[in-house]
Amino acid sequence: MTTPASHRAARAPVRQAALLLGLVFLVVGVLGFIPGITTDYGSLEFASHESGAELFGLFQVSILHNLVHLAYGLAGLMLAGTAAGAYSYLLVGGAVYLVLWVYGLSVGHDSDANFVPLNTADDWLHFVLGIAMIGLALALGRGRGARTDAR
Image 1: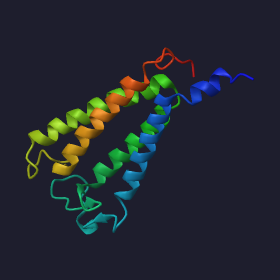
Image 2: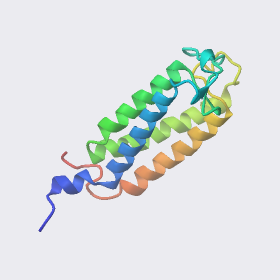
Image 3: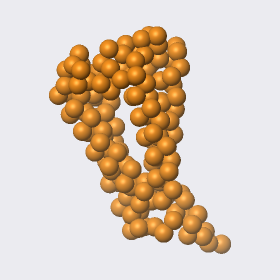
């Protein structure tokens, strides 16, 4: 018995990776709005380096930061529908995270330019995410159908 092409494409590893990361970003976005999981929740600002809220007591967050995680998660879920979309999500998303890493290292954490906001833990997480996402895109997107599937 053979597996239909649509079922093989549905299990493409690049799509699974994008789907998993999309789900993780959605969960992180929601957790950023939950007091207790986000410490100093009362100091949560819309967008400012003065937001004292930290996800897991480590990663500085704001309402904007959480909304970006939610949007990024939704994008991952939508783009995981095709291997080409998943590949693009991982590759471009990884590049965006590397840009955020450089941005975070370049602006002072107490600067008004740090409106997202980002702290040192965020900066290095962005580096790891950028490298991991680009690595996943390149490692999993090499199959001939990874960028050109019809679904």
